[in-house]
Length: 74
Image 1 (cartoon, rainbow, N blue to C red):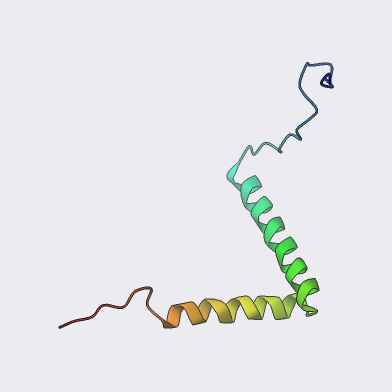
Image 2: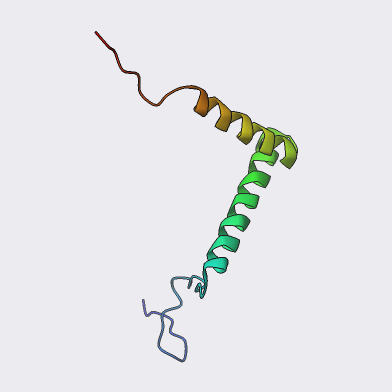
């Protein structure tokens, strides 16, 4: 099957990702992805976005309570 090409000869088969011209563009993308993930979690669990943020905060605190590894000393 023949590929579909735009006037510049580029394939339209794969979407182009937005180009980042500064560090802020990357941060905005991360913020948007995080917001979308929180909304998905809220919908899946049937809770509000604020409750998702609290859930994430509590999980983060739980990870800080225990060391990553335990060392046995003779």
